[in-house]
Length: 473
Image (cartoon, rainbow, N blue to C red; front, side):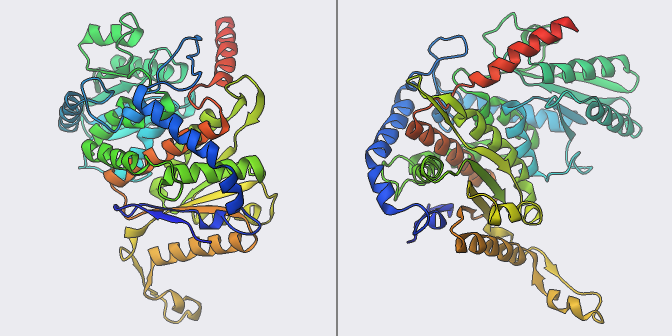
């Protein structure tokens, strides 16, 4: 049994190794057909109206769900032609005039932007000299050692240029989120106090409707640029809106191409037929795996260091969207899977033993980039070492693919559930496709499981407790 869906762009989802004897059967999928049709119709309704069944904000009020509108440009959409022009001009100005940019965000206000950075540059930062400003991410954890390390980097950079021009970009819808606020306050105070070595300014990403919000007030005081966090876009879905796009703009990424990729993926996922809609097919397989095959853990395993951050982004997307105590009728269901980020081949040496011989409670999804073949050839500078002779002329990407295929085959030989996403290459367009494919897959699965994929009541519990504890400090 083979089921692989390939789009005109070359993006493909292969669910073959999820199907067959000892795995998910065609009969199971056939029995689920009415629910699949309902899920597809529900997502179409969200696209059309911006409303999801029984979805309420944390304040208990009806709240729109507009992330399916992100790929499209329009005056009444989260992304507009004017916004893209504004972001492009902002990015060009920053690259010309700033030496350092420090993004202060947490959760969805950090993870998506970090993926864009890794894909545009590498997982290593700051950027190499001569390629625009050095970029740092902070505020994603209240970690004094991390902030001090960045401070020391800034001091070292200031030895070569003084004053060092530093742009702070706090990203917080409320303007009061603890982690990014802590980082923003620390660095602004430190850099302002060292005006002999640093020149500090800012740009903020926040809710413009909160006119009295702290970031809005600070931006007005200093005449800093303000980018709006749009209504109806949850943090984990925000990478294709201002919290992610502002990072892409500073990097000089082609933002229209990023959104075009997402738009083409949305158009490819309109069908209610799992044989032609890759996101709906993916969601259905993951739902059946969780509900009927005990797959309560999901590993996302890109075979690319530049996509390591994508796994971390996906962890939040899956965990917050599907990890729910109750369904939308209030019945206790304890739905969801525990997401695990991995990277090949590193975690073949760290996690695969558990994937291969541990409990049968996992689904592994691989991600591979086709175009990296032919970029790096290994040669053996030690001809006298016979053990190295087999490495002469080896294409590194061929070796990477062989490792992934071996992992696939080993898991499948024991009926271990696994699937494969393939990108023809890694660029703005295909990255937009991948982001949107994963977000849409989660949305479809939320409908199949009848859980609200857009709220996060469990997060609000610890936030209330934390606020009380901080008052006592």
